[in-house]
Image (cartoon, rainbow, N blue to C red; front, side):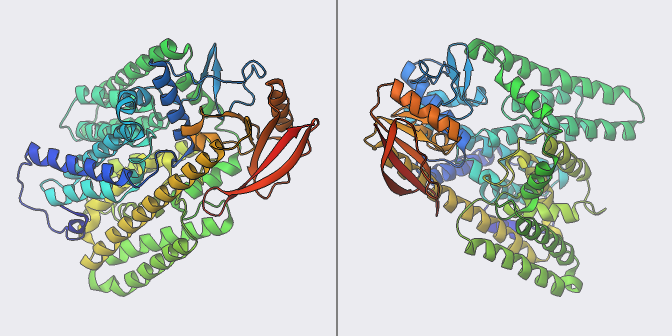
Length: 565
């Protein structure tokens, strides 16, 4: 089964039980494909800044030979509050300096990292994407009973031509969280369909709780999916006992991994970071409403990471054209001409994006265009069983957008906070592909593959750029390096422990960093900032020269050397 077979999906095939050996072989092939793709990337550079913090933590654990996530701080003596800690968002917990957002994924990757390095740690997100593809197949089998061909199409398309392909190749926990939530929806679908009882609901709760130890938005998806399931049960059974029992089972199952993670964090760090992050997300829900609306629009449809009216307009037009394409292409020869016109418009928008150069595609629909097919056709009466899935995918979006952290909508792929919605909409879209004309199926699947390849090329280029830049900076002769780019060291966490770095985003921070450098005995330091920034004058120090270094794409850094006067 290949991606080409997705475009050939048509009438349901004869029901034949799938042999476990075939499933295992497909999972092994997908996993080996991820391993091969990972070799194209530089292990010293990553898709996002959180990855650098995790890598620095894994290196610290490897040095100490323990599971202690303490990354330390070389300048703690002169900066006890950690205002200038090299890794942004580092927490000072007792005598530890911690820069992790979740422990389970980190601990799962540690033995692999110890033996195989960064590529070993990538086994965790790779397995997450494989499990997510399996969940897509399982859910498609329920939406189209007996149609194994379409079910396998969902497996390969989610695995090789969706945002989860990208997230399999970077040490983030997103793919694992999506996989757990995907299987939770599969179990709740069976509960709503009357094929499973409270035990399956409890198992779904366990999966949601496990996902919530890594991804805060898992709580929203779990709540929406559970409410939808209980609502369906109430309508079908006309009683409240069964739905209530299912809901209680989900809550009990949910609590177990959360309590386990609470105990793990207390033992490892003496504090509960995950609960603190969740509480922070809740408290921030009513703030920066304008920014939240903008970032919601960006992560829903946008082709470009820019927070501009042009970006929102392009995203809105793309969504409208994709919906029109799906609707008209499903009407046979009567809608073929308008479908082709809409398809040409979609192609033109993607070509404009490609002409703008490599970079992020932050929109869910832009990075997973098959999701638009599900959004357009999944509500039809001829397509059965999809409304619970669509309700979960769309019902979770408003609260996720309301609670998500602001400021990071642009530098991400396919809406990383709403990846579960992308998975569910893609599953519905694959289930609806047989409704499209053959040429339209080929076009939409080909588009999904092309945009994913664009992301793979971008990830490779970005990782090599970050690795090259970080290595060049690590070779600087100055004893102390000060970065005014807040997340620079979190981009290049591989080198975080190799030099005495300080991170000082603001002007007052730079003066404080100069003081710390002087107190540490350094007679010079290098200030790293955007090349278009004028180096400041610092009391007691003299700027003696500036070098220019290309960072990512067309972004340049200026490195100014200061010596003591």
